[in-house]
Image 1 (spheres, rainbow, N blue to C red):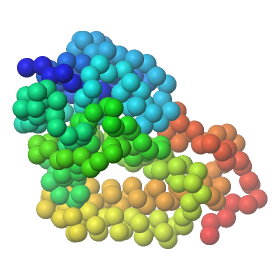
Image 2: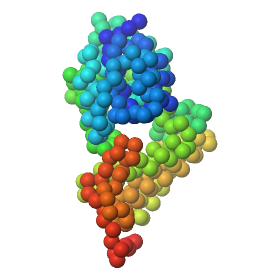
Image 3: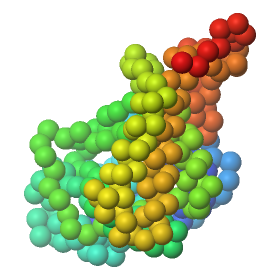
Image 4: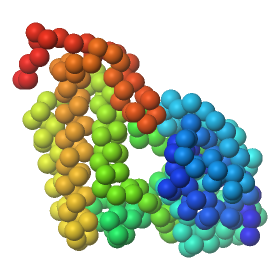
Length: 284
């Protein structure tokens, strides 16, 4: 079974994830990978699966993914992250859409649920599931939109929901999760700073507390056991850090005289340097 469908993936040093993702895409006729300078085995893995690989320097996630859309061969696109795997049930559901409608699904886009694997367990609560994402769509109708973080597909009409999930292997371990939190909290702070938004230490603490309470009790993360507790705790830390870093940017507490790198993996820098000020470093 091979469908007239293109899959897109953007990569940077994804050797731990990519092979698992590509193995599940054997039903797709065209796989496009846009790489932004991998130095590990990512490109060798892509070559092994006969994908079409393009290089593009990273500026933001939306632009990178839209560039991948431009390189696809087919009208229908399955846009994946490198840590997302098409489940067997989802593959069958997508194939049925094409087979029952003369190789062209009836709607312009579809929301797909994501099921996340974390610390040896599938996470069903805490806001992690179903976590619908628009992943299957007509490229003539949909484009990615967003800033430094939280890119999403924009369609003219509300996409329909599919039933079966993508498997999401988001974090290799706790250290990887903490690295993600540090990187994305910096991106968030930079994006909000550019918009002129402000924060305070009290506001950062309040946002962290609310997030943890919401995940653990309102969204029943408590039912995910030990993993749910860890996720809620790190949910507090992530939200606290996002708004604390925003506070820091406005207070100019950094002592670096150079442009601040807010995403060292993609080498994204702050649009304004934060200069030393030895005489005026105050915490309010």
